[in-house]
Length: 129
Image 1 (cartoon, rainbow, N blue to C red):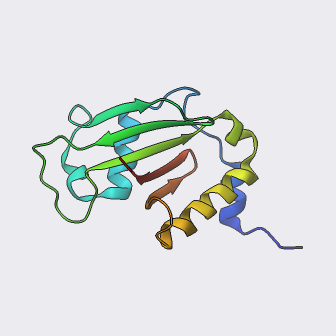
Image 2 (cartoon, rainbow, N blue to C red; image 1 turned 30 degrees about the vertical axis):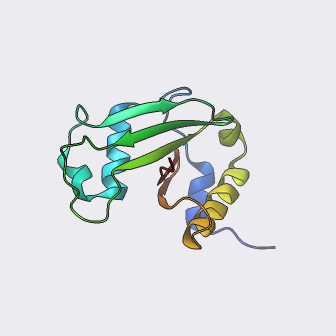
């Protein structure tokens, strides 16, 4: 039987910090700044555009974007999809881990949206119009 690594054990034991139905703008900006860098580091929470996207079956989805007058500093995206795992994922952490691995592999092979970052509560992905 395969022995779990320490990071995997920590991931499976993690206590989710996001409220059931929403993520705050402050949390969203912090994730964007940590993973995207560039122009995202220059804006405040009041400048970031954040819109809830309805229709997710098991996740909470948000479109986070830079304001128009902000110039990009490198290859950071202007707009991203913030996916926050819903209650069904939180109850089935093994499935959550598999989903994250599959999405990352598809992203690396350019067969799915680019994954900019994964964190215990969700992930940041390329926003596909």
